[in-house]
Length: 356
Image (cartoon, rainbow, N blue to C red; front, side, top):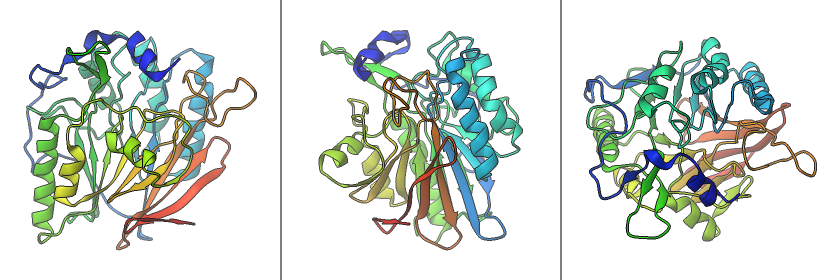
C-alpha cells in the first residue's frame, strides 16, 4: 500500500482545514514564557562526551507479537548504548489499547533512569485518544522531561533541551509536526501536516535569546520532529551527498511553511532529524543543512521492510545514535540495528560528511 493511500485510510477526522486559523492542536496549559520553558538542561560527561539516542516509529501494539522485535531492540539498545538523553520522534503506537501500548514500549525508557522526551507523530492520536490525552499520559511517565503545551503555540510536543550547563553549547528543539491537513481546493485533499507559524515564532524567540546570551553568536542547534521538510526530497532529487539507506520516497507535507528559511535566517540549526519514512535511515548533506532520518525502531507492525529478512521479510529494527564532544563542532552519528551491528558511522561538521 502506498503511503498516500495509507494516509487516506487512517482516521482523518482529526484533519484541520488549511484555511482555518492555526489554533493549538492541544488544550494549552499556562505558558511559562521563554525564560521558564527549558524542558531540560543537560551537561557533558566527565570525559567531555554526550550521547543522544533517537528512537522512532515504534508503531507498538500491546499484545501483538509483531511488536516483539521492537521491544527487544529498545531494551538491547538502551543496555548497549547507555545514552545521556533519549528522544522519540513519534508514531509511538499503532493500535489499541493505545495507552497500554504507549506504556509498554516507553517503560524500558522510563525505567532506564535516562531523561527522555517525545515529538509526537502523525499516528499517535488515531486510535481513540486525543493528542492531548496521549501527550499527558506520556508526560506522566517517570523520566519524561516534556513540558505542558504552550499557550498560543500549535501542537503539544514543542520543547527545548539545552546541552552544556548554564551556558548552553548546543540546543535541541522538539516540534510537533502534527497529523494531517485538508486542502479544500483540490481532489486529493489530504496532506500531512506542517510546522505552523506559531511554532516558528516560538522557535525564533528561543533562538534569539540563546544568541543574545552567547554574545551575538548563534548556538549550534538541531531540530527533531516527525514529518520531514519538503527540502529533504529536493536534496535527494538534486543528487546531494547521502549516506545510508534511501529505499522510499520522502513524504513531507504538501505545504511549505518556510521553516528552513527561518533556520537559515537565525543561523543556528545545523541538522533536522525526523522519522516517518520506515525505509529511510540516511544522512543527507544538502545546502547548509543536514537532513537526517532515524532508523525505524518498529517491528512487524510497520508496513515497509528496510533490511528485511527473507522473501517477505520482517523489518530489522534499529535506532540512531548521536554523539557530541565538548568544544568540537558538529556531531558524530551512526545507526545501531537489532543484534548490535553498527552502520553509517560518520562525522558531520562544517557542511561536510566524513566517513569514520
